[in-house]
Length: 263
Image (tube, rainbow, N blue to C red; front, side, top):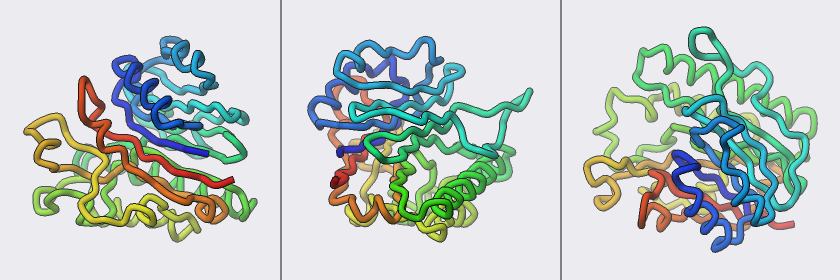
């Protein structure tokens, strides 16, 4: 099974790019983040025409996650138990959707950005990660052999070499010890970040800002990551970071990360 994750930064703006990628890369399951569309306005038809089932979670023009699968889509869950809320009035955001696809429990995750250190959104980010970690640990406790994929835009650069210049990020989010500790807590719970295992090269990025020629200068960040349960990690034979998807007409500022999962 070929499982991909991609922060698409508006699915309606990039339908043609997504459908072309699905066909070219022979993707079985695609986890999308930042779809930026309500469920009723999601452009389902082009994907259904290619043989994909869809599960979406979108409440407004912000955030949004989705799963596209041609190997089955069952037990859909929008959000997870204990997921923190945000806003006034406080409500759960469209940041997590899970389903069983081809026998694998796949979660498409869009972790909160955090905005600035000291901002309430930063606290929200850490709380959100902590609750997800507790829930994910519980899944493994209930079934240590369960194949589980936690994939998406984590909005954390776990290592200094996951950004082009760590000095540039001094005093900013994405690289703080608290965020990195929250990320590593998933490893302590038994999960393996498989993209690092198969793509260990330093300064290998998945995101480049649209501004200041970040992509031509390769000033990027590695924040699109894939945690796998022990049973699934053992089946991941390769991982690719599709850098070329950042090129061409109207690209997302992120690129897909593709996992090859053996049967």
